[in-house]
Structure formats: structure tokens, C-alpha cells
Image (tube, rainbow, N blue to C red):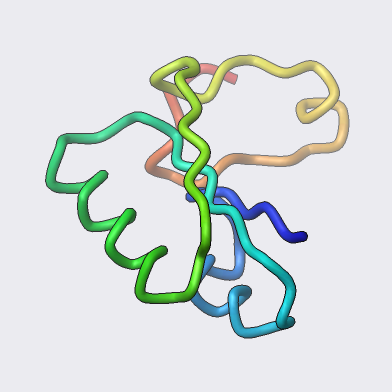
Length: 82
């Protein structure tokens, strides 16, 4: 089984082609309804068999481990705080 996030890199459509195992798409509930509908449709079209909804913080929060490793989130996830 493979569970892939809506914020994974490379894109979830590309990763869906990797194997023949069942795939679950994890959708973070942020953005507008059209954005979420688009991601769900793309997941279905890519062969994902299930959907996992994740309600979390709307923006990327301060994470000490990530800061220590000098990891920087994608621009659309940043809050401007580091």
C-alpha cells in the first residue's frame, strides 16, 4: 500500500505510476473548494483507491527539526516566519 500526500514531491500523479499496489491520497484541507475538487479529481484519474482527509494548520508552522536541517517549505506553504 502507498499513501501519498497532496504536498509530496515529485507530484502525486507521477508517483502513482511507480507501482501496482493500492494507493491512498492524503488531501490537506486548505485552499478553496475548487482547489480541493481539482486535487481529488486528479487523484481519482491517477488511480488512487481511497482518500484520507487531513485537517491541520492552514500554514506551515515552525518545526525545530526542519529548521535544524535547513529545510525550507515550498513558497505556497510559507508564512514568512522562520
